[in-house]
Image (tube, one colour):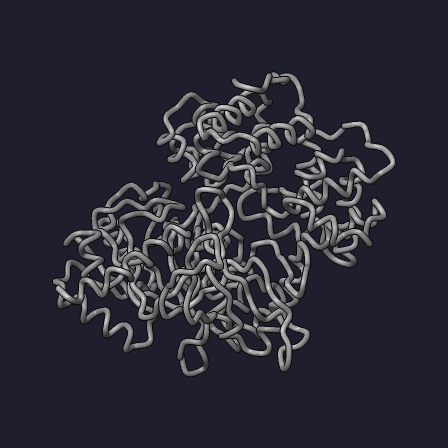
Length: 572
């Protein structure tokens, strides 16, 4: 291993300072191979439990996949705690302006203490405190959470504090993305990357992937017996679809062995029916069972059958007409007044895939077999599946798409009948076609409004995900598309994610995903990407999507190139 001598073996604990030092080294490393080697060797040198934690921490995950929401710690709260600890509140804006990022600003403030504490934290201790903070509920929960967090920062050295903050705001900026971590784990285990990717697809969490490998697990790790205290049911990451320009493009991408399905303006759900009980997970892998009693009741029709089902829910009014996506989102995560909310916004479930049945995974079977099995299961249980057309001709598929739009659907999804289900992957076997041109983007900053929008953050800086750097690349701004209530709500959310402020612009942790419609993409020297959206407007707030699911700058570039070719094609 270059540049780092492992200090641990399987009998020693890992200090958090050593973890921070490795992260610091990664930030100064340009070679992808060297980064994978550094991380892989570091993980291999740690005890199993701490290697599992370190793999999560390294990519900016404080807790297991799907559990982070329980922390409820914002960048603004971290800043306030450290500023109060160090007496640097008055210098905050200058410090933030001088720092390269939020973590470095926290490090700079911590250096202002009279003396550095002696390093005493371990990776396992930090993990324990994160779980304790996440478990705090009830009266004065926020105050108690922040007290625990302050105790952790008081024990940190400046360098440790830098990476503690980075983990909590999920902005590591050292180049180790999820894909890079999979390469590093492959080096740790001395196995092919494809095999690690397969295990990670099933485990859906990098830490669990490390544990399975270190304990001698294999590609079916998702079906192993749970350890004491571990949940028996683990959600799989949902398979995602690539965008296509039109129906003909879908045929060109997938071939003639293809099916088309209605695309709902709803929310993805994964339903686990095991041992007579139901658990439901969102596309972000948060458990939402208590919020969706209708879905629990529908899945109970399976009786003794066991299954993992993929589907979509939509909210409807008293007449059965679909409600707006934002109305649906008010049901997700709700734990109070469920029956009242259910009466106001009942849900409908439409199933479109079967991931496991009666204890056996089906994800490696071709889609044609999975939908046959799903239809049979749904018929027996009286459950509703999505409307689809199988092996249509091009004219039949185009009519199906037009009819879907006319009926009020968002569009269609085309799926290769030979494709496997690839959890967490934007696989080549699925493509989506929408009536409008939209992108899922992340808000990275916002400007204070004026006039009627005075007091609201109302001009949003929109960014696409940059897979190369792990950051976000801005491609436009917009203040269009939201109602007054949504302006108020999103202002509160963004202020809770605040990282800094200068000249009327508030920089925020990249957490809020919005679906943005636009007319076209144009060249722009204003942004580093060299591109900007023209006439951008927010269609909806995508609370069901994580920043990791936002569209990439590479997708934007492809759309821009395709757009540039359209006038040439029209002349032929």
